[in-house]
Image 1 (tube, rainbow, N blue to C red):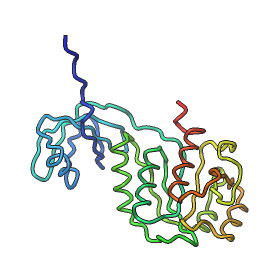
Image 2 (cartoon, rainbow, N blue to C red):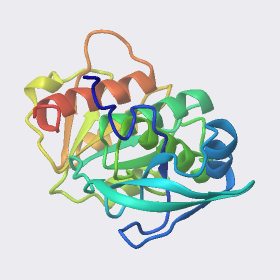
Image 3 (cartoon, rainbow, N blue to C red):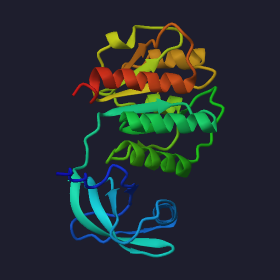
Length: 247
């Protein structure tokens, strides 16, 4: 007797919609997402797709109507509730375009709850295109199965970040001059990681950070890491130690 095919198939497209979803919702997908579904994935009436709204979780839908520029979706059932991600922030100095994209994509995949661009004295890229980062976040969530988008904060200068910091949240400072190995530092949620720009932190910035009560310095191994490598390595280590990788 042949096995019953999995439903929905593993190849089912997965899309973020900024509309509340529910049993009675009739979402309409337009713009680039509609182009992707209709012209790239070639979805037809009756074909399945997965949707998530950053509010209620992930839903299975089917195409009720497919026009040239929009698709109307019929909601079938909820597949998963909204996930609870670990309360970890990544505070990072923006880097050049392709490497910044990589930080955003991988931090989202790894489960970071908030992305905080930080402008330091040696930050080369001071103007951050929020819309571009938001698009990267959505694409990464669609790919990795997240149902909750990480929060994207407005860029802030390092002195203001430190001045306004909530002391109940540990700030793990990736210090290029060394420190305790991250695995030896107990910093469960709520926590944040701070990584620097391509040129590293200045002496003045380092002194300011080390004088801040919530800051704990960490080392990320014996080699010099690129800014984007340091950010993702630190997030990975934290997730393995304190996040949802332990389940």
